[in-house]
Image 1 (cartoon, rainbow, N blue to C red):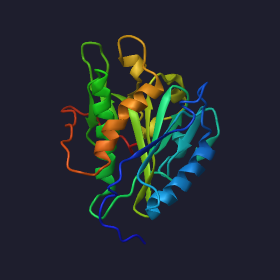
Image 2: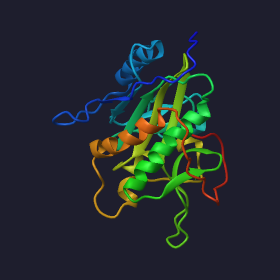
Image 3: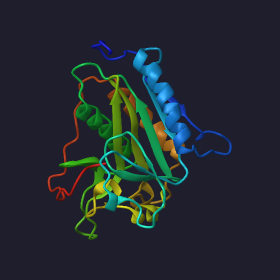
Image 4: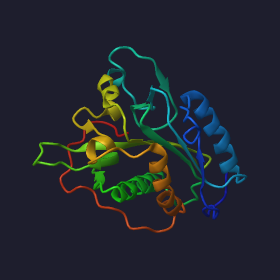
Amino acid sequence: MSTRSTADPRPVAFQYLGLTDDPPQLSEYVPTWEYQREVHAGVASGELPPQVLFVEHPPVYTAGRRTEPQERPFDGTPVVDVDRGGKITWHGPGQLVGYPIVFLPRGVGVVDYVRRVEEALIRMLADYGLATGRVDGRTGVWLGADPASGKGERKIASIGIRVSRQTTMHGFALNVSTDMNWFDNIIPCGISDARMTSMAAELDGPAPSLVGVAQAMEPHLTELLALLPYQRAAEFSAPVAVSGAVG
């Protein structure tokens, strides 16, 4: 068991798996998961500095440990069962998936780590002019309700992680230019009363590229994954009702 009690002082290293190829390549989920485990072993041992893997997957449903049978695809589409927290979600084209693999020293809990990943997403989305935040009792990043347009709270990014040997795996999925119809086949993250959304649906004008969004994430993840004190964005003042587990 690790006895390290301080954060790794080395800066985060970022890997773009297939995203910067010409043409860009989708990363199959299971081989990427296997690669995550290899990198995780290096970070946990101290051989590697903190890492973030940026990928875009082909269409795939993945189910965390708390997924219930009725939340799985209604049409029987196969699902990859994984060892992260949270429930079922979808990954696929137009979605930026980030896998931060970071050593958590004693005193840094899982919830604090998740709040840091959320904060990086909130700050990056603000750079694009999107005001996002947290909803009390639910993990992930949300847009607040807009009574003028009749829109309720919408989830734009999901988070599901695993911590082993004090080191994180899995991570976040940010909908950039995602086909949202894929989410209609499941109860995403176990949430039946709130909608998923994307940057493309919320921005005026064209959606940014996945590489551009990943590059915009880098400084925020570099700062927040250094595990130093930071000022956290507030939760929305009028949250939606909680219905089941988060994702």
